[in-house]
Image 1 (cartoon, one colour):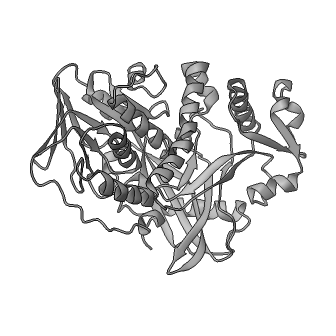
Image 2 (cartoon, rainbow, N blue to C red; image 1 turned 90 degrees about the horizontal axis):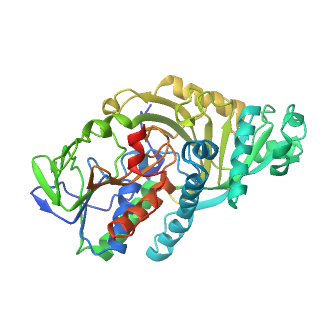
Image 3 (cartoon, rainbow, N blue to C red; image 1 turned 30 degrees about the vertical axis):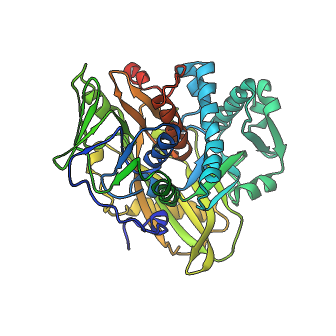
Length: 461
């Protein structure tokens, strides 16, 4: 059995012959990391400024979390908006939600402006809820959205819900009661322990293939201002007063500014020669989490969807670190040798890594993770195959989690020659795109109000 075979990486066309950096190099902006964060950052910086841009990747294009994710497009945070309000206040939390929502428009504009054809499916997605505690949390979220004038998650509660009468009056205008059989039909399950659900805009996309197609556009339209090097791991960054140096395999890259679009915990030694040391703070705040996923093909074609299943109330209040995470399922069109299938992808099992540098993409897929996915499918997904499931793909990916579950976007406070667009926090496609757009505007000289994404917030953690 294969250990890490991703359906997203398998669809890559591999049409580039990218070489490693072989000599010293000079550029205006250096971007480190060629996943969706790095590729879209390159695109927006080239589009919105006149800078020369160089992109380097330690391994190969989209070989990290971008090629080893669940393929979900969602515009919400891993951390509940109601908790963000408690941490940052109503105005800042709402502004951040609007920022992430704007990524839907940014993504649409990329497609229109570039003409790329990466398949994308957008529709209503669902999340099934079992516990009263989780239901109240999402009602609190809806309350925040409504107060802010934002489109909020539509909540539906089954008519046989045992805690229906327990819901406080202040939430009664935020949900509707529907027949239990209808709720289970939306959730595509026969598991009667789900008593409520939320409905919200979701999408499904191969973010690795999106990166490859966008890179093709960049090469075609910005070749005079753009360079890209694969297999160029950066070991050291030296930040000076007016420029920066990056070292890779004893080769030096001289740039005005560096944008880190990595997961956040790579082996990069950062030396700030123009101020206080930031090395220790940077390396020890971002935590690595390995997500385990599996996928199989079915010939009965159904509409694309994205569904989450919340089996229990959160134990910590921060979903990113729960010991009993929710499961998520996506269904999308998938073509092999000119034959169309549905690809069903499931994820949920995860493991926090004390030392993220020990993670290897060649690591065996844990038997416990596969058994957990099997159990979930047979119990929950009503269209799952009977008996043993013939997985065509099983894969795992290392994600970067910031301490407060919020993406890091903007300049390093101790030296503004270093900027961040990192911390996927499990659902990073749309936040990466928003972050890329914002980074380009910062480099173009635009000023922004303080936000929950600011790297300065790390100083309080």
